Image (cartoon, rainbow, N blue to C red; front, side, top):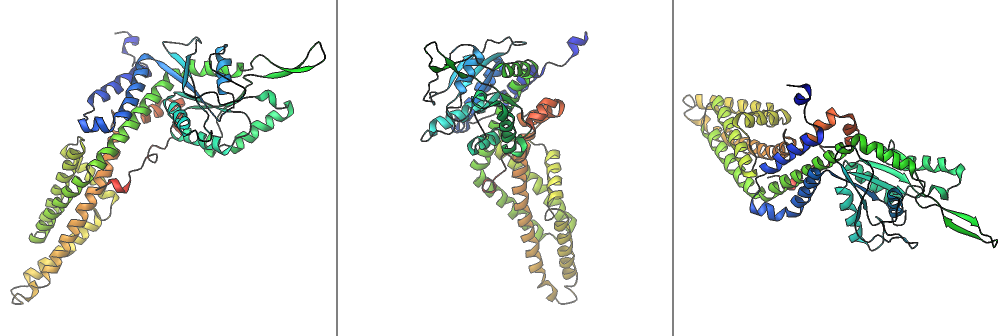
Length: 442
């Protein structure tokens, strides 16, 4: 077999294969399909774009910063509506960008409404949705960074969105003040964004022209966007497929998290009942059984069965050895479930056995304190079982996000093996972006 035939498929093909396989294995109930319909449809649209190799480049920014003018300058013709009153973009607009791309990628330029318009909540949400579905976002500024723009930059970075900062209308700033402006913008950026690239352009420059009649009039000049055009061409040629793959994986991961949280929420009450039954079983066994080692073995068996039942309840797959391994990890993270439980059970069991052995010599009087000791053991068993159930539910949710074939795990693997992907994902704190709420746990 030739080396080419043995080589792994490119990142885009590999990502497509894994996501399609994961999508096909999603076992969703009718109720889940109904409740999560919009989220599932959003992921399916992203998956369709991945299969058709359609990359979306969106502009985002305040109203009137020249987003539409910038896209027109890149296109070389006025395809997006603009006006002097600003805020002319009322809904999403898309146009193909006929730049020569390496491979089968098709690039769509996407215009969005302003993010700061008063009484324009619908347009704000639309802009956020479009940015979420974009593979690369150009954040357009026309002066120093405002609070609204800084928050938008932070939100985009926190969502793992690859981002370029474009400073438009540079022609409006005197030559001597331009570097000071760029330096001020960089100082005002969130801490994690100060290494972002700043590209300065003038999408629709104007200059005063002396007319034959002696009057001076402002007239449009040729766009000055060549630095941005070259940067985008280089970026898309080198990393366009990676951008498309990252966004598809992120969309799958968002749906996977939403599904896991929905299942936790829906099954919380059933999980509470299940944990209560297992707690009662363990408490009864511990209180009635005089053998300490048998108590511990039975407790481990019940905890393993509880984890397996929780897996079945949440629609997750876990084998018996995997359940025991999960319990081992939980014990390592919880003193109550680990050393403290063992020490207390041994101590209480030893006290109870001494009292039982002393019963003949004390004419049964030593049995009186044995009942409270047994009750203490039962209470400890109930508490540890409930703690096991809560920790197991949280661990199962994390495992649902981190399984080897799941989008979140594929994102992390891609970040480990691709320096550019790792750079884009640095701001995406995988463990902290959507923590498990205590209200969802049983």
